[in-house]
Amino acid sequence: MKRFTIAHISDIHLPLETIQFSKLSLCNKRFLSFLSWKKRRLILQKKNLDLVIGDMIAHSPDLVLISGDLTNLALPEEFKQAAEWLHQLPFPNVRVVPGNHDCLVKTQWHNTHAYWTPWTKAYAQEDYPIVTKTDTTAIIGISTGVPTLPFFASGFIDRDQLERIKEALRKAKEEKLFRIVMLHHPPVSGITKERKALRNRKELKKILLDEGADMILYGHTHKTTTTKFLHTDIPMLGIASASSNAVRIQRQSAWRKITLESKEDMLHVNFSVRAVDKHQQFIERSSFYLNHKP
Image (cartoon, rainbow, N blue to C red; front, side, top):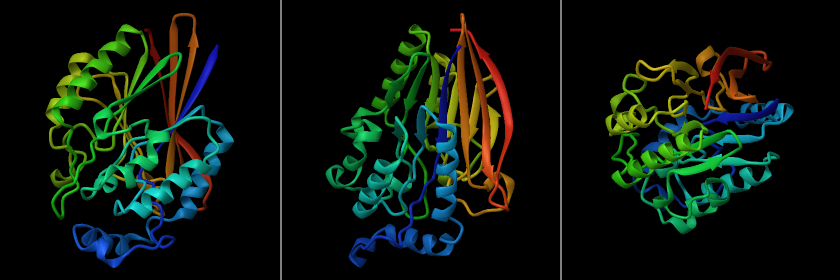
């Protein structure tokens, strides 16, 4: 029996205090986000992120998936800081998709997202979705982050990317791979406020229902949730911020462990959450199993 372990984290929000940037760079929507960051900077703590990474190291995942929001204001300096942080992670494979904070305002690719190419595998926005394949899985990384008006944190997937998502799902099915969809914004209504939601989620929902998927991972809400996708048996799994300092169970700093084991013609999938409790100890909970026949 061959085992493959995936770790999913999200909403890293690396600290702003450690970088220097010009006040002129805040003369746009970033200013409102900067004020928001000042209010919540005690809620998002690097020490909690370090605990999560340490626990992940102890479980030796084969692949780490990060579903966006490594930055707070999408400053070039933050992209450099995040690249340095990603480079120091001691994992064999890491894949990243951007979140709304990483696309807060319109930026130049070469001095922002280009720093993350080793982990996104995207050389331009038009490269999404990025498909990462293993022996048994296809991880389809979707970009939902786009610049929005002040007070909005919504996402959007352009028509061309939607077509590529459809093709990626179809091809992975033909190859009999377990299809994991990763994106920042939840793909259905009712999970977050409308001003923070994926605007064209109806189009994505139709593709996912028509072409099929086997698991959906997302972040954005800073809450750990385990539900099913729209009257299907497809697990739809949200994860809290890995930097969270919250004490409420759903919002505690956490990572999701997904273990896949192939035996004969069946793939056994176990997924659970490892969260930091108020004593800074890890509690593993919400353990579920499913069997997948390619």
